[in-house]
Amino acid sequence: MTGGRFHALSDDQLKRLLAGELAHGGFLDPGGAEQPRETCSKVEQVWYELSQVLQAEAACGAEQTDRIPEMVGYSSAAQVQATARKLAALGDAEVRARCEGALMEATPEEVIAAVAELRAFYQRAAANGDAVLFRVS
Image (cartoon, rainbow, N blue to C red):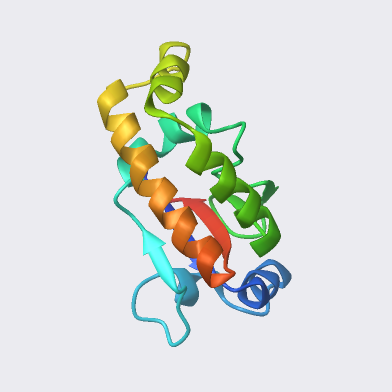
């Protein structure tokens, strides 16, 4: 089953991943010597819905790359700050309204819960000065 995970990491780690200097498999998979600060996997089953509903906030990455398989979006630490502010201002009623026009398998309540989880993840990443990498695998 396809799922999407969000990873909080330093700007340096993101730069090295994109340059191919840090192997994504060992870094993003559990057990590697160097790991992201945090991985948000609780929203993994509603990643597609989040990618539609949170486009304006760039929650699934402000930039895209094919240098890390499969589908990957990423945001630098500065971009994470902006996304965290936008998510903090996004209310449940607006999320519900956006769900009405989205192609979804999840219910609006599941999406609202996932947005709340992702909002908290982005707040922690912003507080730590982290970048965020979103990867579908």
